[in-house]
Image (cartoon, rainbow, N blue to C red; front, side, top):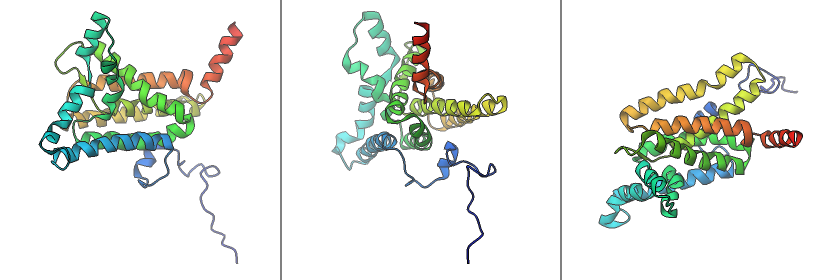
Length: 253
């Protein structure tokens, strides 16, 4: 006898939610298959935080290990004062330029790191599968650097002009994911408005998180990362965008 019960098919049954929804990935198994580029970022983020946690407990680094987190922030965190000094003096030391990338991998606490890691894992799967590994890494690494520069210009040389953690990276991926949903909306105004629902939800969550774990003007970098991530996805990084831009430039030439 044959079994007449049919398994739901998201492509044929519109009432079945698509698995590509990034928010659904938050409830998925942590062993769910992720693209290699996403695993690479997660392993670096988790590995660094694990070392700092072990150092804080005195398991590694001995007595000096307790201060490793503070030392890492001072050496690898982004500082608006340092950016201001480089711009005023025209001196761009590699030791300071590397901060634009490394700040994303240092966090103030375990909770801070976990919040970012969960978002990157959930969003990274959808974005990396659509964009490809290289363009995903550009979105995840280059956009936060640009957002940090914008952050530095906005806050100036104030005392709390430090930026650390992977939240700008997560918001850059939100920008890419929002563009994907916008593109899939195919001009439908309702679906286009819903495409921006995630950024509103995350900003509320970010505000709540800031009240308990991370105060300061870091939200400026996160909003900037979202805007730059969305813009780059729409012009260069999104699937087919570079080819479309190149075709327009050749046509004008």
